[in-house]
Length: 76
Length: 437
Image (tube, rainbow over all chains, first blue to last red; front, side, top):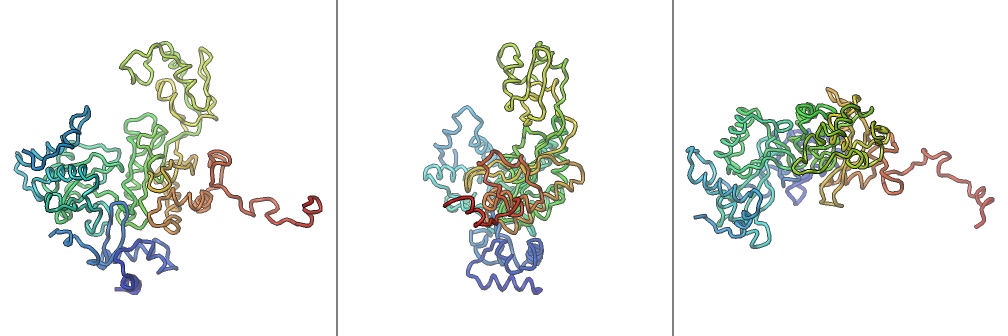
């Protein structure tokens, strides 16, 4: 995990909630625009550090395995 | 005998319209009989449980679906929408019933072979129930379970050359009217730009980073067959700069009854002789047409592209030759602040490959909205909150009279000090020397 990715993991772990809007991460990287932050988050999804949660209308990011997972809904 | 009694749903079948209840019952019977020996990968009776949970919702007056979840295909943040039933013991067939959005081909042209393939795939790996098409335009596949998603995605992408569509805080699946493929009014190639932008913006389509949903729609002319200016955050609506072309002899042929008005539509009853004054000239919203009994004239400067005259007399009137599109932004459905129609941002833009001019506007809007938009705020709401003027600044488009709908009504415009001759500063003593308190 690189420095930027670690910064995001530390930020998430410092909070009690498990799902975050994209905008929540922008303030962690004031020098990078949204596109730069998106690249970091995409790399973390690819590395299976993070995963998407979607309501259908809105999408949020969370650490992989955190929060309610499909198994908790009774799925195998 | 149906698995669940559904008296309320049965009433829906009694109306004169085609009924989704009948369709689902038909699918339930087909799955039970399984004439094609399909190896069903999710419960065979899921359509019956779907009817059962809907009946329960009608009885209780509240939904029994839970919304959303961590389901999707690897690397994609959209295209799959998690659905779980909150009465899984009663309705095990729909306990997990996720929706899949499939990116429809531009303007929805299919080969029957493709439709058969997708239906066969969905019979096996899903409920067999589809929605052709969802409001965004996608092919909606209703109801499957998490283990089927990667399998389904593999088959779609590797065997059918088909991608998932957009959902969540993504660019949604772009949608276009059928444009130049069939329509003489198309002012640009809607299908081509729809396809090109779908390819160019794959990252935005599949990896969500917007504050909320964002929709492109492409209408080839102001008839708006995909209702871009009402339904999309970024609407590209075909228009022309020069004059409507008039074929005087064809106008006379309409007046003389030789040609049927509206290309023969509305011909189910006798509407009487075609009256060009009442049916065309008097219906012009800007009163820019006149008919002197032998010649039709149009004051093109006043034309608002309502299309009524062209639709009524398509053989006599035709769109101009200097063609392009208008960009309207910020339309949305009523979640916050009510529904909004799109606001005109660019009155005319050329729409030619590789579409760099259009993409430049799109990307400037995204950069602004991604930075300043609040979570779950549509572009139209951001514009209302921060002003249309701010949008003009970020897109580098100078303010023009066409941006203002009507004086004192449109709250978008505010002058800045540098725009006012002499600025804000006043010499109060000088002012008081001429004005008593």
